[in-house]
Image 1: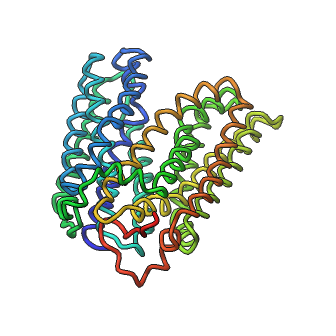
Image 2: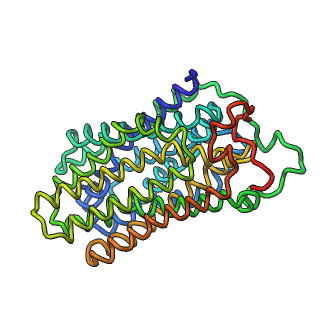
Image 3: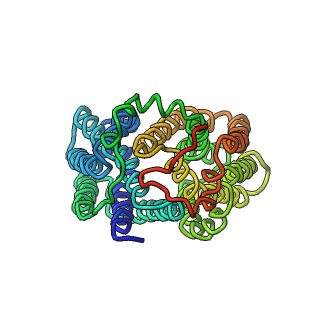
Length: 421
């Protein structure tokens, strides 16, 4: 791991650590501490999604033209301003404007950091690099949330101001760290001949494998991440009688599974077809939904229901650990030379859409229609397996099995793609 990659991983950990301080407590802060009500708190969460959807289409183009580092620095400063202003905002308008700044900056960080990882890695090291990124993100979120939980006091607005100030400080510290990164030269749109100047979005949509991967990504994030804090938690409370402390234990089990299993799983997936690994995740998550069904619809004891519910989150964590070294490197390897930033931003946009739609659909369904909720998401998980198998037919041998291309010189910024993709 080179010096640039080490700094990028430190950046990932710092950004996740800062977000962990505030994300779990945002709803309580707006609705109760500032006294702005549940409606405003819900709007704040929606603003995060809307801001991401607005800026991500432009972020990809900016990364391609200017490089990921300048875009990341702008995003970090924007997020720091949003966090600071959110910590002192007392009116609904001020809170919403602050949330839009924080949401926009946070959204752009993801594809910018992912593109920096692509530019500093090769096809052989990329899976391990993205696995490390996912590991550090979860570790940072968990540690940040744990420390933030001990600092916060729902009777004191000043304690929340401190949390947001710490979050802003992490972003600004990350600015300092990132300015020391010396990125290798990676091809940009400006480096290519004028003949290559057709619309990058049109080029992306013409890549059948990338379009199929985006569809698959939407289902992945909709059926898993989009349910953690909405549909699945509502189902657990309403159908399985899960207490809030048990829900916290389930979330901790998810993080613990990722942290403990990530590199053991990496050894397993590195030598297997990416499409088959994703298909296996669909089957694991199908089992997770069956276990969740037992927790809420079975007739066992409360202890058995709680154990089954915690196991559901752990199984989701296992699937996430398998996806982290698989999906993000595949996005990079599908990107033509110099277009990794555009492809990363497009996939981040799909992720945000799924995270916006998932809670809106899963929340009401999980709270009231328990059996249909389990059946629907069991079907979605099996659909992941089907979509992954279909995607495998669109991939070249090297894209699906990157270790076959070890002797090939891979251009930094995105692997070469065969003409039929």
